[in-house]
Length: 166
Image: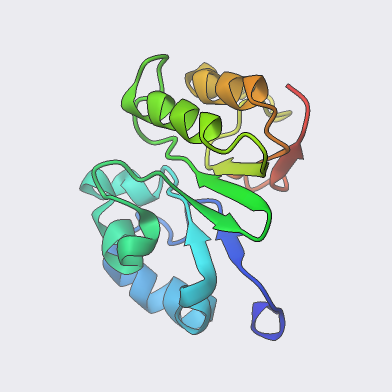
């Protein structure tokens, strides 16, 4: 389906099961659709990608497209949109390097539409997974700066969460 579409694709983590190894990326994700479309995919990591130490398979497969492997977050501009890929597999507390970077990025792009995406959602309707407080500092920064769209993955029983409300 993606092969016949124009534009970019955002993948929301856990792209190669079960452990995000380089072999799993090369033998499953890549042949299925990743290799043909890799140049226009903008990834974010998921918890399965970090089943390998430090997300080694994820970073090896995506290379520079995944951002600095010591961070795993990055941003880019697409038309009038400022797009931010965040890493919910690392510390996200208030004052963390990622939260500070996010605030700096948002402050330096005040007049652009903002779309942010990462793996773990802030909220879910799945029983037993009501809230993920760890991502709250990122959510709060995006809300404070008026982000337009937030996309998350993680729960296979839910579609990607897109919202403009806090």
